[in-house]
Length: 70
Picture 1: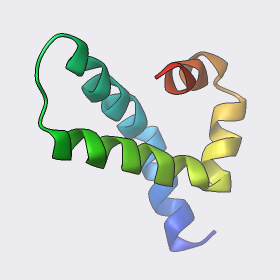
Picture 2: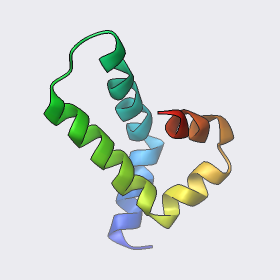
Picture 3: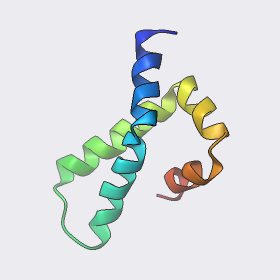
Picture 4: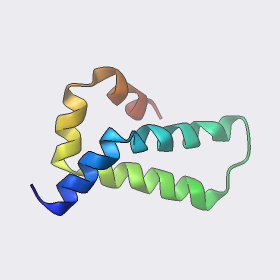
């Protein structure tokens, strides 16, 4: 397992993607700086790019639905 895979696995275990999704959802009720939104969406895209993330979300259907819905 490469260092990137280990890092992405850690991000997934620490619910970083879910935190980013919640940040993006906050824009419905309050103003969030555009740089925060750009960072959150780019981070989600980069994490989901890795095969480790795809394998992780294969078995966590409810969590993957939250990411897809945004």
